[in-house]
Image (cartoon, helix red, strand yellow):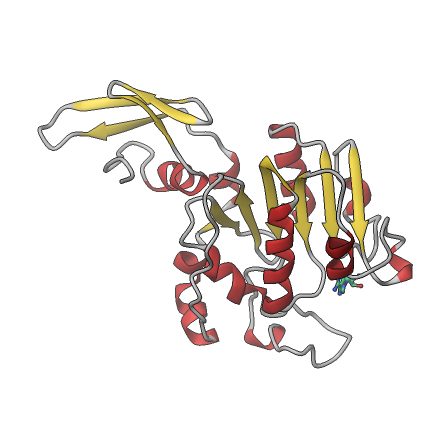
Length: 244
Ligand SMILES: C[S@@+](CC[C@H](N)C(=O)[O-])C[C@H]1O[C@@H](n2cnc3c(N)ncnc32)[C@H](O)[C@@H]1O
């Protein structure tokens, strides 16, 4: 079964990401130490986490970072409110081609999402999902359905404006695939080799996959992460149109 660590290392290797920041480290041996980035910083107020910065994420971002990060993993305080703050602060120190990964976006049960955390023991995802749903209108945001749901934001250079919608558990539970842009590990990680577009007049055009763009008979088209995922999850042999 794939984990957050697999996902972070997949991104790090595929996109040559060098500078890594982890918000919420807890036990470094479980994830932080395994991340294959050359330069790594951790933030955690709990001394037992042995993080680079022994402070909360708010304190660390307020103090400022001298350089930008290519990969930021947000896994600290799991409330929608704090994750939104962490995300917005992370965007300010994210390199132009960087990624932000949010942990715990796809909780299995409502009882795991109660805020404030009812007890220090037991499984708790918090209500991170409420913030993740606000990002799903972006084509550069998908949630990979592994390890409690890992949301991936790719820095596309667009303006970030959260949708503001607030989803109650029942609606989230019924519509989580759409609300989170949920994709499997295979959909996320397997590159599309080829897609075919059927024009309304019956003509067929085959497009090659060049990772960053689709190159086809009609010219070159740039795609966001989500569109790529949709392409290779839904339209392996048939694709219904270009994004507007
Ligand atoms: C779920 S654990 C992190 C697990 C780790 N990232 C991993 O992948 O194994 C959450 C950690 O966040 C830390 N934490 C809680 N509030 C925080 C905050 N405001 N800023 C940074 N870290 C915080 C806790 O001390 C705890 O160690």
